[in-house]
Length: 157
Image (cartoon, rainbow, N blue to C red; front, side, top):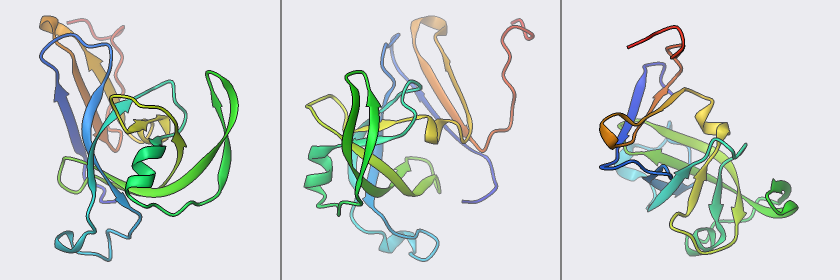
């Protein structure tokens, strides 16, 4: 990944309880060796940004739809306790030029939801992440790599 800072901001038209954004998931490939015009076909899906999830995951139905090869199993701590889950290796792309996360190991989750991916702290902790709610709408912003220390207590507006 390049060392230049890249920002990704989504403004919701209301206050929201869920941070769900559009991303594209690809089978694993090396984006440094494949020109953008030759990337494999990806799936545009909705992803939930979840600071309570230590690792990112995808839905089992997405893994099956994309025919992703299984990469083994891992034990995942969920709200229902420790569960064994199937692992896959993917790339995912935020819709900002050159903001690709390659070779990400994710575990599958079951169930039908409004999203097919959970973006966990394994991604969020690579940069700066902020959520604001001024003017009765939610704005989520993510910057990679980290460039600021945000301290709302020290800085009064």
